[in-house]
Length: 177
Image 1 (tube, rainbow, N blue to C red):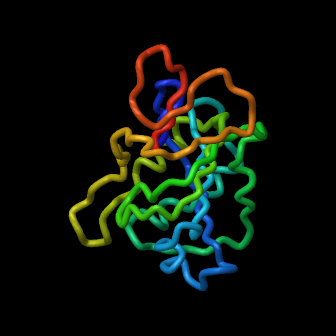
Image 2 (tube, helix red, strand yellow):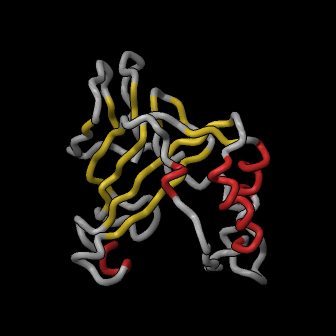
């Protein structure tokens, strides 16, 4: 996962990326502006089969390579959001180049469960285009980043510090942008 919670890194973090289409006509323009993107981050953990995620899992073989696109007739992404309403939010950056400070992050507190087969299907995705030497999309996270004067807010009362940088052990919660 890109974010760390209670010194725990999850096996997977799903990002539901949205752009401010009211202000920016294209995603590429939104990426470059401070209020351009909102990303809902959902932690995943091994457990029960997730029926809603299975629609995406079934489509993964068709989008194995970089830059491959398919369309869904019917898919409701809200099935991927945990029922617990609690979240953290902060103004941050993209986690991949161009690393612009254009993202309002919304990190859901509770994870959703996926089974081993569903997780393995995502591990078969590639960073490479068709015809290039295959490089699997695994271990694709960056190191813990400093908070840099960012304010992290929670939608719930918390007695623990929520931070984006490495802290002493007595600080119970961390989040890594």
